[in-house]
View 1 (cartoon, rainbow, N blue to C red):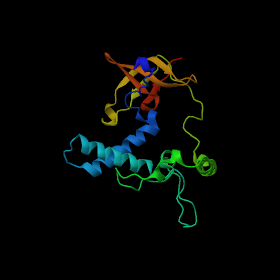
View 2: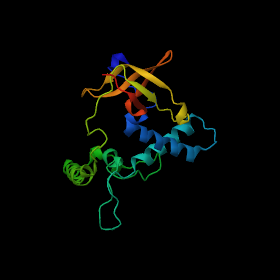
View 3: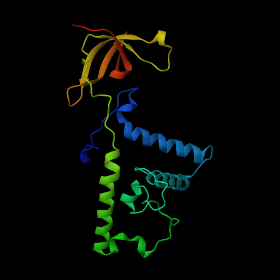
View 4: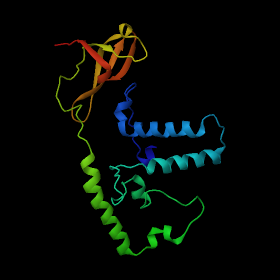
Length: 201
């Protein structure tokens, strides 16, 4: 991994929301697998086929608004970037020359790219929502603060209390992770899983 300059970035425990985009896609893959496979036992080829079908399904999901008007263009999908169409309609193993986009005339490819880009800018980009959660500045947690660690698997009156021993700021200098000492253990937790009970001065 080091030879390929791969740098691992880990979410803190109980902080899966740190990877919101890919965590949501992992859930979509898992949900599709559960509905397709159920309790079947698959060999390698079968599992590979299922993953290809799941990939095709997820890449054909709309990323812009669907319209009920039949005269409107179809919604943009990730497959429009990959295949220049919403879905691969041919069964696996059947190919035609029209599927080989690199042999098409340059003007036709350029027209399709320009059309896609104009729709991307007009329809998709305005839909990106501004994140609201981190817009208000508040006091960063500090070493020495006494906190209660939220544990969704335990009743509220049994959540453990601990002291912050180390803060882990992000690139903007905001503390989003901390190390909390609870008894003899030191846990890494995101700040939204902590309730401050006593601030150190």
